[in-house]
Length: 62
Image 1 (cartoon, rainbow, N blue to C red):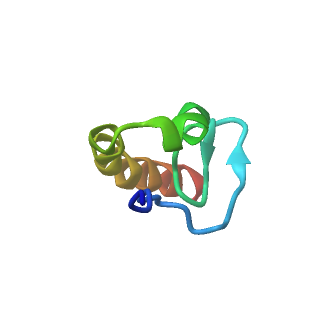
Image 2 (cartoon, helix red, strand yellow; image 1 turned 135 degrees about the vertical axis):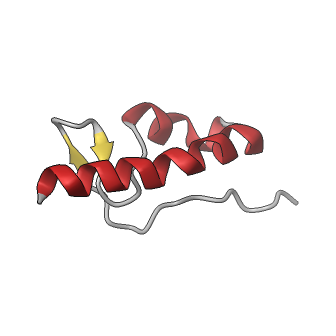
């Protein structure tokens, strides 16, 4: 049996077309499409970028 795949998804799915990221989890469209096919190492490598994208997005929106 496979272990569940970690996901930053919070079930608030809306892609900002200008930024090209989901404003719920802050993954890019490419990451969203490949997520379940990525290795655990690839998903772990994306984690730090998610907080950075969130901060940058919130700064722009304010």
